[in-house]
Image 1 (cartoon, protein in one colour):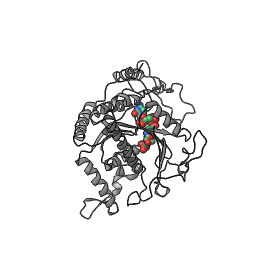
Image 2 (tube, rainbow, N blue to C red):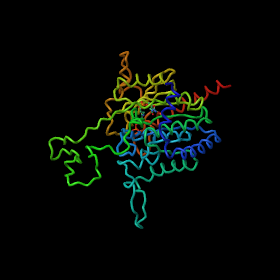
Image 3 (cartoon, rainbow, N blue to C red):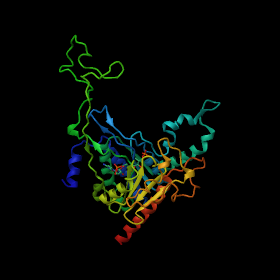
Image 4 (tube, rainbow, N blue to C red):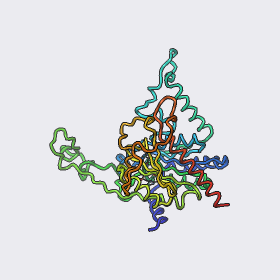
Length: 393
Ligand code: PMT
């Protein structure tokens, strides 16, 4: 099966998301406006994707992504004059509101009641919140931000394909920034259970009233509390997942506008694999940039892997400006750079670091790495646009 056949076979097998037509209409109007204003437009994908186990979904498989990378990057693109289509996993973090929506940053903690019982922002947060609010308003008032949600991996695919097609009139002014953590595995529709998967055997005629004891009929769930062993009527759940078709080559070679720039991400947990996997992805899909990151250091360092020299370029938050991260492991910074197949030790924790340490906000919060990534990327996009213009003249 060639790539186009694989595409038809996948998309013909699933109903499009209910909101797709509405999203397309919104995106068309948004893109038309940006074309008229000669603006660059970036499609930022963000957050995880769910993999439903049942058609009438009660259970699904999910992943860790909170959407911080995508939401923080969207803010930086807006700062750099881009219009942003923010295609995100529903309920993951959103640009601007993310500063007050996370469970560790609950918006109620920023508020107070004044003497007249009016709700006010607490004085110590006024400056930071005003800044965020102004930027958010500016983006909305100038029609620079379009926020579109998806939930499942299939919805993501439909949305990505439709948006890429709609972006055609933008040509080289279009940038794809694929930060979403898209599931690699799913259950194909023809193998998916319609109803909630049961945890125990169901009698042949469950709706016939009988005097039998429901527990003996197997309507039991093993809790491990009173029983040493699960009932022999409890079921194991073995999930058989297929690989999700990789449509990155279709994006590069069909869906995306001619001359546009495509940036994908590569996430690994093993420092030995990161650069290798990023390079492999770049070679396989022949796009323009892979941004590699390790799960444990992703807030402080990334690597740009490009087809042109220098091929590999590390971007790091200076040591004094690193934000705290519960899940992060600072001692692993630099390890993926030092782990090349050629055995040469490079970089390391004290290797070259981007930024002079003066960036960041005046509230003394850590410097977000996206504020280093996006300006670099904007330069690469500018070079690409110039290159495309020279080629077509
Ligand atoms: O959200 P955070 O908690 O801030 O975390 C950010 C992040 C770690 C999720 C992000 O920085 C990141 O690395 N995202 C990509 C994760 C990944 O490894 O993706 P992948 O190797 O499965 O896919 C490679 C690329 O193709 C990715 O850009 C992905 O968005 C894209 N892809 C993948 C599969 C698919 N079917 N369609 C895609 O578009």
